[in-house]
Length: 297
Length: 172
Image (cartoon, rainbow over all chains, first blue to last red):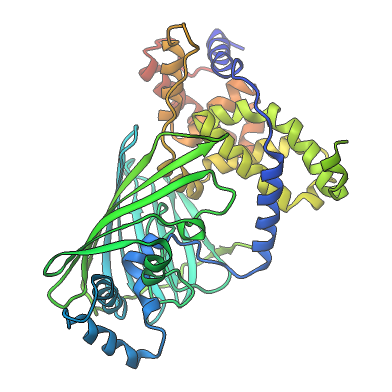
């Protein structure tokens, strides 16, 4: 071993060897392990955070009936004297979700080291098909999600190295917009929807302009998108929705703030600023299944 | 055996016994891989939970600690996992012992390690902290020895730049 190796080795040991021991959380690990085993034998669950459902999927759950019900929902939204801001917003989201669209998602973390990234994508709820592509700052890495007739694929490149595509079991009708939201696109009765979240979490929605709404929600439990074992103390989402001239969602801006806990103590908050811009409603979305793709079990 | 363990199945009891030993043995490796204690505990927990899912098969295996070490490295360098987790967890401030000045060298090294891409960080930690040969590191990372060499060289170059260390020349 050279002197360089010895110095770096000694510095690495000095960095961590003095750290105090901590008790292994065996109880929690057993619980999480048992839950994980149960999940593996069940169907794939979205795990989406309700906030993305707030933005893109959520209001679809307002539409419980067949498509012919949707015009009624939209009509209700056009009667401001009758509809509450929540219903108007939900109807607008439902109108946005009934057809294909392009989406740009920009995420910015407000912690050190700060980062930001932009995802470009498109989705067609009618065919459960779409894609998301996120390039990373090194210029070589990227992540790509594809959904083809409900079958989900994940691929990309790490540095200059192409990652093999993975195909996930089951069918789904969403794409994960953003890790912080656990997100889902598209209409699905399996998703925690906007209206359900507003009801369950006591969220407030206020109208701030002719086609603008402000919302604030603190999801809990499964609505956070994290499992019960995650050390999440709280999650809060505050944001604004802007509609286009057709009363479809044009822009969704929000901040999601997480507070984590450990050993009964809470840590500093983490805030991610997310902006989603929707456009090109109704244009076709063509996505091909990647080949080859290894099946994830 | 504690009263709690008496109520566990044999498999769960063996898992608990392994966890109690493995936690102390691997938390520091996890800290170097993950960048701070919070993320390290999360990384170690996630890796141990995955082992639980496969425990019945794994517990017949010879070297559970080697398996866990590979899992830590793979989970940390996992492209997909990293995008989710590193986005969400706030950086925990470096802790200084009371009445002592912060160790600036330690702070600088910790930050420099975190500035390395996960795979380069894993190579540095496995080579210099775990003292593993290149062949073993290559096996753990699922790449060639040549890739380990080049990742190692780039990592040392970057550390040299970040730490103003003229002597990290990557000649190992």
